[in-house]
Length: 394
Ligand SMILES: Cc1ncc(COP(=O)(O)O)c(C=O)c1O
Image (tube, rainbow, N blue to C red; front, side, top):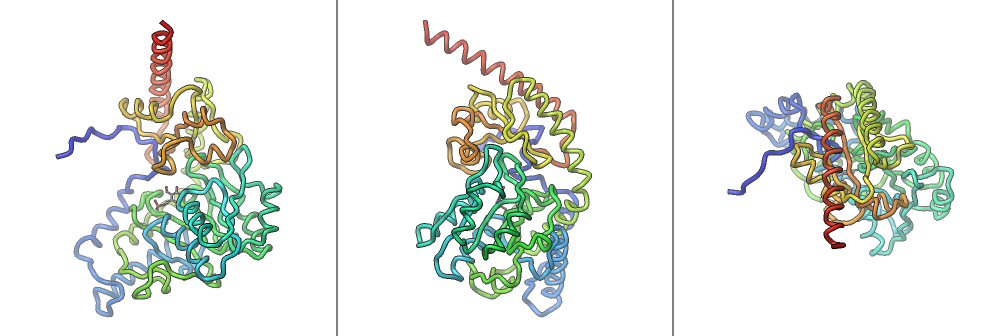
């Protein structure tokens, strides 16, 4: 048997994943038990499964301002991003594609794969505040290359910085490009209006909003031509074959509906907690990344000069607080975050990056306790550095 220590008592890593919402779990349970059936079967078991999936499709569409017919269910955000990027590329001759330099690896890596297959990849630069600037030279030069498609995320998973995706989408469309937006971190945290923004496609993920991991969607304008990644029985408009995971999709639907319904209230509550947290961090000497930029209400990304983020996260974990360190926020790759690098943050400071991301269970007491534990951990690590520094000199 593998020995495991108990997880931290205070969970502050909601951008990595959110705990399953108990109401979502309740809704899913019958579909893991008595309500079995293949949604493609014509008998009553199948029809019941089909009805449940279509109800979930309506819930997900409504949460993001889309039509139900525009929802392609996938196994999650990573698959939805791959489906758009590789699927759009496979349906046309190689040309130019553009993605922002701070995208999640599940956008960057498929784009880089295409670059090895004859496509010209433009990685769009961001400002020091982590934004793609719609008035900036880099964006103008990107559009002048006449890209076939462009992908810019709604909100960054590390910094929480929110992009002007409606403005970017309108300009990309005017320049003849399909605009895709990864909104995995934005659903339930920002108001999303897929149709009004005139986007070609948008990615959603269930487990960031209290739904199950392993469910997501690509919202897709019906005029966009995509080739499927998974061919077979023709489910999901022929764009994603495979027998549907009914329980997961039912859970996704309920999670999306609940996240959208409480979004405004939760945003105000979390914004207040974020403000308290940041004030204490800055008073303790931390640098808060992209502090002046519009950001997700639940996310604080910061560093203490001279203190390694992974080491600090480890100390906090032992003290009962789970938060994300920079290298763990977006990938399994060690080293300074590509997002902070793109923002021009000094690598030495970037290696100290730590992310606090809050959710529906986070309260003021948890944030106060976290800040106290953090100050203690920082002081202990500074003492240790001072002692080992002295030892090195003697
Ligand atoms: C911005 C962003 N896009 C995509 C994903 C991937 O979503 P999933 O975990 O559902 O594959 C994540 C998850 O970390 C994310 O933060």
